[in-house]
Length: 90
Image (cartoon, rainbow, N blue to C red; front, side, top):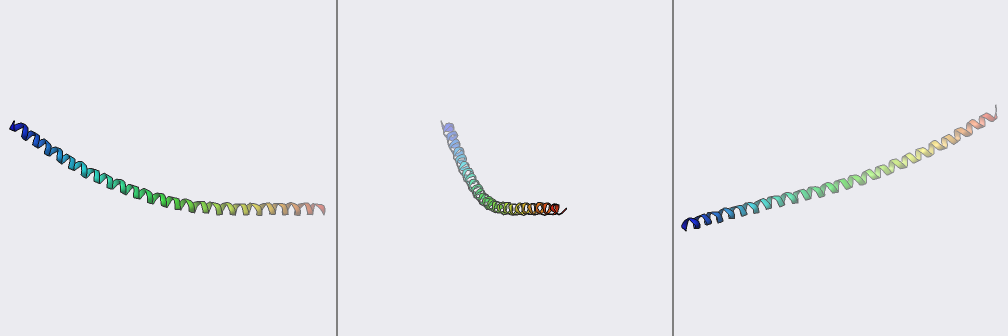
């Protein structure tokens, strides 16, 4: 009977220690999860800012290309007019 009580007391003590270890592990894991969430949030914010910057840069580049295409088209028209004008004199 005394052996059973001692065994049960030891077992209760072991289980209490395991519960305390689990509580500690849970706190550590929750801290890690919170840290990862903060890092993720910071990364998302940084990437969104970079995305906006790249979109603006792409917009400006596309605008530049359209302007250059218009210039090329204007020069082609002028060249064709020049060539056809010179053909009339031959």
